[in-house]
Image (spheres, helix red, strand yellow):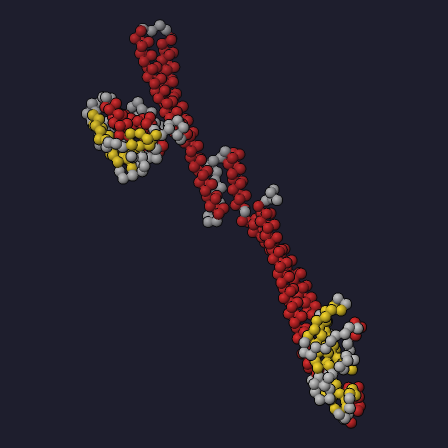
Length: 471
Ligand code: ADP
C-alpha cells in the first residue's frame, strides 16, 4: 500500500466506499421491496377470499332452471349452496376452497393437502407458515349467512408469488449497480489523475531544477486557486528567491575576489620592484609602507567578511547581553571625536540610562562605521551630530552630518555590499560599511534608513525595538 501512487490509493479508497454503498443500497432496496411485495401478496389474498365469500349463496330448494348446471351446486344441509361463476378458486396463485367445521374439503383445491398439516381456523387473520422450505399465507373467513353458518372459506398463497415481481428488480440492481460502480471507479480514477496532474508537473520541474541546477526554471502552473496551484506559486516564489540569493552570493564572491585582487597586485608589484635591484633605504621604506597599507586594506576586508559570516550564524559568535547603551554610544563618540579630519566637529546628545539587549562589539562597530562615513563624506569645517533617544517602545540612534549628501537614486543602493556612490569612488572605503550597519541593525531586530539631500548632508537613523530592555 505504501508504494502505491496517490492516484491508486485515492481510487482504491473511493472504490471501496462505493462498493460498500452499492451493497448497502442493494440490501435496502431488496429488503424494502420484499416487504412491499409480501404485503401486496397478503392484501390480494384477503381481497380475493373476501370477494369469493360474496359469491356463495344458500338456497333451501334447488331452483329448477339451474338443474342443468348442477356442478355449481353443493348439497348442503337441507338445501343447496350455489357457487357462482365469479367464484375464482385458483387465480394468480391464490387458492380459495370451502371447508366444513372439521376442515373437510367441500369445494375447491387445497394446495397444502399433501402437507397433511392441521391448520387451525382463525377468522379474519393472515397466518404465516412454512412447508417444504416455502412460506405460505393462509386467510380464513367464517361464513355467517343463513344456511351456511359454520362453513369456512380458506385462501392460501405461497410467498413465491411475489418473487417474480422481485426478480426484475433484483436483476435490474445486479446489472445497474455494478455498472454504476465500474463507471464511478473509472470516473474517479480519471478525475484523481487529472487533479494530481499538477503534482507530476511540480515533481518534473523540481527534478529538472535539481538535476540541471537551473534555478531560472519555474513550475508555472498558471492561474488557479486550488491547493496545488498555491503550492506551485509558493515553490516558484521560493525558487526565485533562491535564484536571487545564489546570484547575490556569486556577485559577492566575485566582488570579494575583485577587492582582494587589487591590493594583492599592488603588494606583488611592490615586492618585484624592490627585489629587482638594490634600492635606497627610502625606496625600501616607501615600498614597505605601500605593502603595509594594502595589507591593512586586505585584513580589513577579511575581517568584514568574517563579521558578515558570523552575523549570518546568528548569536554564536556575537552573544547578546543587557548593556548600557547610553554609555556605549558616548564612549564611541568620545573616541571618534579625537579623529580630527577636515576640521569637522563631532557633538552628541545622549539620553542617559538607556539599557539595551545586544552585542557591544557589534553596536560599537555599527556606530563607528556611521561616524567614520560622516567624517569621510563631510565638508571641511563641517559638523556631525550623534543623538540617542528613547521612544515609546523604541530606541532611536541618529548620525547627522552636513557633508556631500547622497543622490536620491543612490540612497537605496548604498546599503548593498560593495556599493559605492560615484562621488565616493576615489575615497579609500570598501563599500561594506553600510551593509554591515544594516546587518548589525537587523541582528538586533532594528532597521536603518537614510534621509539625505545632495550637497546638504545626510542623516542615518537606526530604530530598535526595546520593550523590556529598559529597567
Ligand atoms: P564606503 O564608505 O567604504 O564606500 P559604505 O558602505 O560605508 O562604503 O558606504 C557606501 C556609500 O554610501 C559610500 O561609498 C558613499 O557613497 C555613501 N555614503 C555613506 N555614508 C555617507 C555619508 N555620511 N554622506 C554621504 N555619502 C555617504
